[in-house]
Image (tube, rainbow, N blue to C red):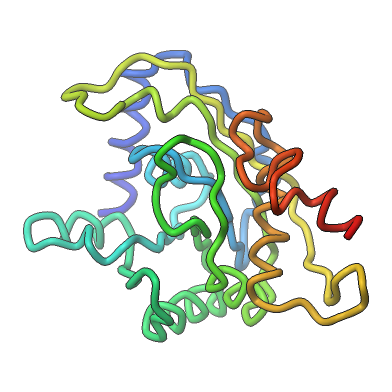
Length: 222
């Protein structure tokens, strides 16, 4: 059902956000082979819209286990989503993520673990770093902003808003920190989110922005 649901998502975006979705960098997504796509998460619409724009049908999503209620679990699974238990080392989800990448698929993850309440970046979880290190898959950052205005809290219907989605060029992880020590999974996750932050307007960068605790420039200087 994924091709059909993906088409439905694109049609809904066209209807409610006609000519207001500004997309850059889709050419940065490899057309075949494993890809780990990392993004910021500020609205419910982010995962299905960001994934539906990718020109491949083998896109899979990590989603919080709380979303897989009896009423809608089938829909999440039909959209290639699988559950992950947040705030825990969910070995089942991690193994499934690595298996998907090992067999050449696209995996879309949101290292913050859930939507940001104020649209600003929060600290990434180490699990994303674990997946990146162990899969060795190409990494593609994606930044989205404006989507938090589409379905604001309390809204029953989507609002018209200018939504920007920017897919960055693939990048490789450094093996070591600037001081020469090996990168931990948490440091790896922070490095990846720094790449996402660099593509966002400054007000969205949060903890990874200028002056923030994990501002890449500040961390490198330290």
